Every structure is written in C-alpha cells, then in structure tokens.
Length: 199
Length: 199
DNA sequence: CGAGTGACGTTTTTCATATTTCGTCATTCG
DNA sequence: CGAATGACGAAATATGAAAAACGTCACTCG
Image 1 (cartoon, chains in turn blue, purple, red, cyan):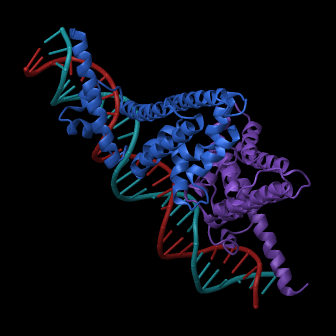
Image 2 (image 1 turned 45 degrees about the vertical axis):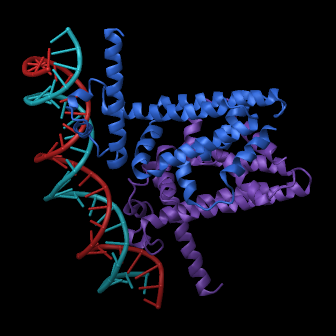
Image 3 (image 1 turned 45 degrees about the horizontal axis):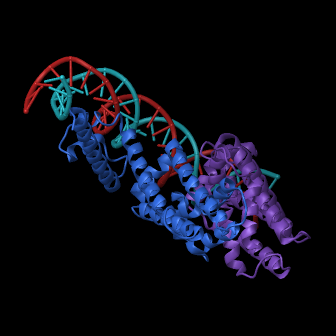
C-alpha cells in the first residue's frame, strides 16, 4: 500500500467519523442547535480540524444527505435486481422507499428540519437522486413490457407517471402529513393502483 | 322583507367587502405585512368595526381560504355534473383543479405565504374540502363502473387512490415545485395514467 | 337602539447591539 | 513535512427594549 493510499484511507476514516458524530448530534439536538465546535468536541478534536475535511457546516449537511440517499439507492438497486416479476419488484421497490422515508421521519422534528432545508432550497443532489430512482423504475417497466407483464408504452413516461402516482409514499413532507390522518387506502392499495395503470 | 333580513343582508355585504379588500391587500402586500388597520382604512372604516364581522385577523384568513375553496368546489361540481363519460369528467375535473391551483399560485410569494400557513397548521377546512372533492370523484367513479367504463371496484378506495395519484397536480406546494422543473410527462399524461388504473 | 368609533391594555414584531458561531491562517508538534 | 490547533476577523444569531399591531370596551351619534 502506497503512502498516498494510506493517507487517503485515513482521510476517509476521519470523514466517516465526523459524519457519524454529526448525524448523531443533529438528530439529538437539531441541526441549528449543533455547531461545529460541538461536533469537534464530541470527537476530541478542534473545530479547525473539521474544516480540513469539510469546507463548511453546510457541506457536512450535504454529505449526510448524500450518504442517506446513497443508502436508499442501494436498497432500491438490490430490490430492482432481484429475480422476480416486474410487478413484484416495483411493489417492493416502492414499499422499501416508503419504509425508508417513514423510518427517517420517525425522528420527526430534528430530521424534519434538515429535510425541509434540503427540499426548500431544492439541492441538485435531490433531483439527481430522484432521477436515478426513475431510471431504476424505467428499467423495471421495460423488463415488465418485454415479459408481457405490462402493456406496450413509453417506459420513461410510464416511470415518471408511476413515481408521480406514488409520490405521497416517498415524499418526506407528504408522508409526515399523511401518516397522521386517517385514510381509506393503505400503501399497498396505492401501489396496486399504480401497477394496474401499467398493465 | 323583515327587519332581520335587511340587517342580515347588510351584514353579508360588509363581510364580503371586507373579504374583497383583505384579499386584494394580502395579495399585493402579503398577509404578514397587511394589518387590520390597513384593511379598515382601505374601506374607510375603523379597525374596531372590522371586529364586528370577524373575531380576528386569522378569522379573515380562514374566511378567505373558505371562499376560495368554495369557488374551487363549485367549479368541480359543475364539471362532475356535466353530461359526458366518467373518464372525460374525471379528466376535466382534475385539469380544472390543476388550473385553479396554478392560477392561485401564480401570484407566487404573497399567496404562497397564506397557503403555507393553512397547510402547515392543517386547518380542518382543508381536510373537509379534500373530502368533499373525494366524494365527487367517488360519485364519478361509481357512475363509470355502472356504465361499464371502469372495472368493478370499491369506489371509495378508488377515489382516494386516484386523488393520491394526481396529488402533484392539486397540491399547491408540489405544483409550485413541479412547475419549475423540467418533466417528461404533462398533466394530461398523468391523468391518463390514473384513468387507466380505473379501467 | 344599534352601527360605528376612539382610546387603551395586551400581545407581537422590529430593530439595534451583544454574543455566539463560522471559517481562515499562521504556528505548533509529532 | 504534514496533521492538528489556538487565535482571530467576518457572519450569523440571540437578546431585550421600543414600536407597532391586535383585539376590547365604554361611548357617540344618527
């Protein structure tokens, strides 16, 4: 292992530790109430040292968002790659996204604060994430068409419609609102509805 | 016409004038920047007089929201009552709701402020409005099933799913966001998608 | 008598400034 | 030499007193 590789590994390790600490503190005290000095103290280092790995507090926020979305995407990929019918996979894909959103929002107030900021300022990473997911959906739909499971249709368009139709299961703010109110339909009902439109 | 009826008519007239003035000022200067004295001055009356018709500034806000939703509901009813296929009416219903939402949001910043407050605090009137619309949709779906246009299904469940699927066309905040971004699908595409799920 | 008002107590908002936090850099230390 | 830091200026935020807005009520006037 070269000198550079060792240094790089150490750097990654530090980045990860900082993100872990930041995530924990943000979730516990809220994003606004936690300052970089708090994060540094938690790790037994100086706040100046944090800035060797992140250019700003916002940058940490970005990185955390990226990490969470990456995890969400990996979960999605592992569902999309399964050996199962397109319908089955689309259903599990959407349920998995729903579950992740619910779990993320369970911390409520603290996480909500961070999500709102990211959405209100509509960070490009969010759009990029949605687009990646859309491509996954598009692929599953294409496969479903090939298998004769779905009717002939434009996969790109169908993917966007399917995701729009199930947006209340994946959009953090909508999920937060809808969990509270009494509803006739379950998530499964809505997914079933979306799948029918594809067939 | 009795004494009471005259008085009642005068009261309604005042209520209406106040709401008109409030709506205009709120849209021009924003809800927060407009105070009750401004509304009163605009009408050549004292602010104390406003409180003979509305118990608070918030009450005016409520009344305005109610008036707008009532207009939206009447537009919806007139579409739902038309002589046309259920598909056609459901499509026009959704497009009409979409148009109203877009037009309402066109004033952007000023109206947005009021809508956000109403949604964040989730006023019961909003839930009630959505429920009324859902009942209209349910009726159209029931008629569509009877006409053999849609498959056999639970109308109440189908109505909620259809509305959930088209929520991005009717939810003020989502519409505001989605108008900005480039999309593959048009509103018509999404409605078509929702209708397919019913057939 | 009752529609309408000016005056007034209470609550909320504004605004100036005191304090905290952010982010940089020259310097230390292993 | 480079990882790490304390000290520091700039930017943001908390604070609290002053001003404005809210909402009430005794009173006026047609």
